[in-house]
Amino acid sequence: MGKLILEDGTEIDGKPFGAITETSGETVFATGMTGYTETLTDPSFAGQILILTYPLIGNYGVPDKKYWESDRIQVSGLIVSDYIDRPSHHQSKKTLSQWLKQEKIPALIIKDTRFLTKHLREKGVMLGKINFKKNIDFFDPNKINIVESVSTKKILEHGKGDKTIVIIDCGAKNNIRRCFLKRGVKTITVPWDYDPFEKNLKFDALFISNGPGDPKKAKKTISIIKKALDRKLPTLGICLGNQLLALAAGGDTYKLKYGHRSQNQPCILQDSKKCYITTQNHGFAVGKVPPGFNRWFTNGNDGSIEGIIHKKYPFMSVQFHPEATPGPKDTEWIFDYFLKKIKNYEKK
Image (spheres, rainbow, N blue to C red):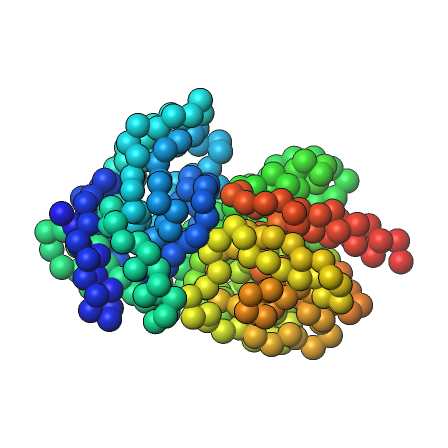
């Protein structure tokens, strides 16, 4: 048996189905009913022990790597209510248990995930650890710049097109690049601290990706974004990129009590009656809209800021994931809107 231990002293035994190894991190929950493969490979979950609230996990196995959102499992540990070890799906290449063991990620079956989720909603997300044979210390991923550990270590070029977008990889999901490529855009993906202006790269716009942790720790990324804003370069951010853009422009961020991690977050377009259902995965949010910007989207549940857009220049960002995977693609039009803004801005 393994044991999940939370920093408030809560201890719950669980049956292992992943690697038998200790781990620690921030304990969070996600309420999506499907898409565990994409969720587990989302770099925004780095440093976190993830509780999946949907009761049946593993029933469709694990598909080929080309369907993942990164090249490995990103969570530190996994907690489920029920694990299915006999998957049924034509894309399945292995069981979830086999995958977890291959990547040395511990996982526990704890029947009462409802209790755990309610506990974290009431108390707020907290540090946790999974112990087997030895007791380890708690680890807080928000105390370090964890973006550095998930960012690419080299420059990657993909696609061809009239427009070139530099993607600052703070932990970018693969489907972000796919969304640009299918729109005929060339992408150059660079590390979180790579300054494309110093390197004299030729490009038309800047994109700031999603990623894990406290945005204020990625100081080098913030300084690069400031340069883009000073040059009036079209800029788009998603998830962590939304927070980093806000900080670079003079706004502020704060930590949410238990974050938004689901595929059904309602986001209302400012000055309209349109509400979009979105996929989200973040623990921090924009608390202060920077000077010169307007609020673009608002969370329909808690009223938090879900996007900002500049009043004059093509600077914009959203807290949700328009590329989804998993989840609804109701807001994928954000990519088209941004590309249109680039073209219109160049004509002026």
